[in-house]
Length: 250
Ligand code: CAA
Image: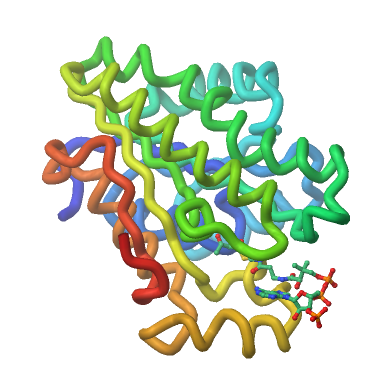
């Protein structure tokens, strides 16, 4: 349903993939949509220009979600220039897939910092203000692989499992303040992150395990996010909603 009063939604990692689909759906409902991109991303201005030529009215800010000080500076700027944040979608994430035998500390830390520490860094900047205003939505993007594990992803599976622990604890703390906190756990969606998997692995080890028989679409995940962001979803909190084509049922 279109918004009666405009709300500000901040989507981390909104350029491309899931994040872009989420931004587009939110904009279509009348949200003021702000996204973050890695500081120094040379393609950011070009992307923003192309999207806004299509009428989305996005704003974009450089932010290293893995870095606390960068998150502080980014959110301060967004609040000053756009307004208080009503909806935070913690979407930014990376993979550094390799077997545990080959996993080094650098690739462990990079994934934990970007995929898990980022939830603290970003949510910390917005949750108190949401609670004070009596309304807010925090939506954390996890993964089917946080629930079931995945070959080559000790780092990613650990971080994504941690996402839902964070969700549950924070949801309890803010439940009486009109703020909901939820996790969504997408399966294999047709984004660059998934199409980067070696084709023979995708075809032989992954696709056969998706009962629906195909990769998910970014718009399907975005549809779930806009529901969780809505007023109608006020009674959904602390949930972990799977969207994986039947690949993993809990
Ligand atoms: N299950 C079981 N065995 C597997 C396997 C799997 N999923 N993937 C690889 N193997 C096996 C291979 O068959 C191979 O076995 P043999 O030695 O007996 O032939 C062995 O593991 C080594 O495989 P590789 O030659 O591929 O080894 P590698 O070191 O070059 O690469 C890898 C390993 C990085 C894990 C690579 O296989 C890979 O990228 N796998 C995909 C990992 C994956 O699913 N990532 C998800 C990314 S998408 C995402 O994360 C989004 C989301 O939220 C869902």
